[in-house]
Image (cartoon, rainbow, N blue to C red; front, side, top):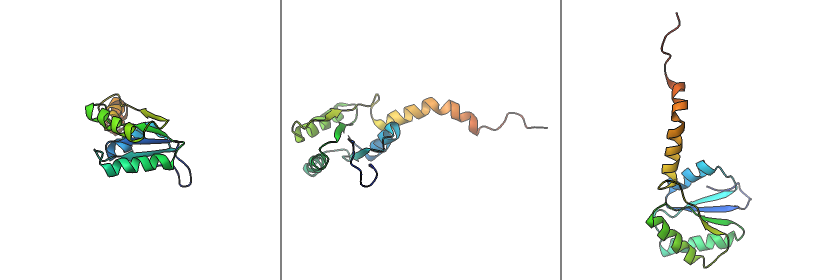
Length: 126
């Protein structure tokens, strides 16, 4: 997912999974960002693609939006090392374990307000 055709991304968000990219996009709602997933790991090929993507968009801020756990920290460290001190790289942590969990938690918090919309009336009109 990314910005409209012909426009440059202002931010590039890297997540561990595709569902985390979709969840982050839903939470943030930015149309000028590019959301990318590593597919759960970082092969040398994936790292090379991230470096190439960063080089193609030198003005974009790189958001290391990996999971809020040890594995996410490790991935963020590997990407930071691969980008060799590029400016505009920062860690973006979900409050919970990952961005999908954050969306589910947010949806659960708003569910009571929406739940009444689908309930049948307690009494039928006479």
